[in-house]
Length: 364
Ligand code: ADP
Image 1 (cartoon, rainbow, N blue to C red):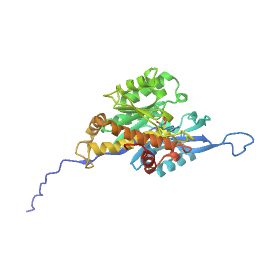
Image 2 (cartoon, rainbow, N blue to C red):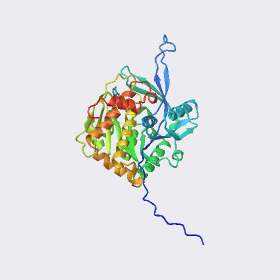
Image 3 (cartoon, rainbow, N blue to C red):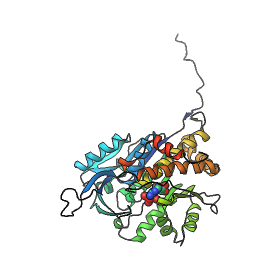
Image 4 (cartoon, rainbow, N blue to C red):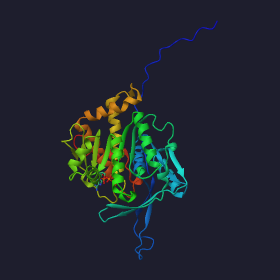
């Protein structure tokens, strides 16, 4: 008679602490000004074809710093779409969730003021990114991921809007930390009130929020940035306000009356495209490293995936001020470096460059 198989006690499941970032939303061509070289006498501007789209930039930044990231979104079945896929793959981002649609790839023409500030003209009628749907999201999109990041450009139209909220619910159910950047682009909304409603829904869903001063004031109705940041911090785990050449301000939930200002790195900015995405990609990357060290020092998280978010949220609230400041300094360095080159993805800095610039700050 065969011997019965030995019964062994299976160990308590313990999985590596998640670290991946899943970023969802628009991927598009940023046509950035490139002088008047073709026919200087005419004065007609030339544009350089750069890969862009805020959530794609954030994923590319995260990967470029050495992290694992994936992108969910859509390009058109055209030369611009192939160009974008190649560009994103080259940065190391997993493009398994990048769909190809019959609608054309979205195009954004960037106009720069003499001081480097941007305004946009979009070609998106409808763009491929707006027709991404929930069925395009891969089954295992959120497995072993720590962050789900999204913005408001995928909330301007259906089916991308429902797909984004469906992804956010799945990510939340899977225990991920949700991150939102309103990325207010008035030209893409039929009305400001519709935009505000969608951006509030994004903020309500997410725990980690990155805003500009203008967005914070628009969303809260506050007349100054400190009041606006405090109001947003009431419903978030952490609100980070980027201030361009002034650096950033952190608003923590337990201490909204004490915003933490983090000064910038003085650089010669040539193009601010993507600075906010470089900043936020770096912020999430270094925050992820800190959380891994504090929540799970041995690299294993002996907790079910669903509990990772609550553990991390608790840790973020408890992080010493110096550690939060360190993360923001590194993010400021990434943002500053991004402004020193043209375009977004082509201007994203390496981890070594970020750490070298940040190394000059005392107590880092
Ligand atoms: P967004 O593109 O989202 O509006 P910002 O322009 O505020 O974002 O830039 C994001 C971050 O990049 C800033 O918080 C800052 O750290 C850095 N940064 C942006 N512009 C400059 C600049 N001119 N000099 C130094 N750092 C900058």
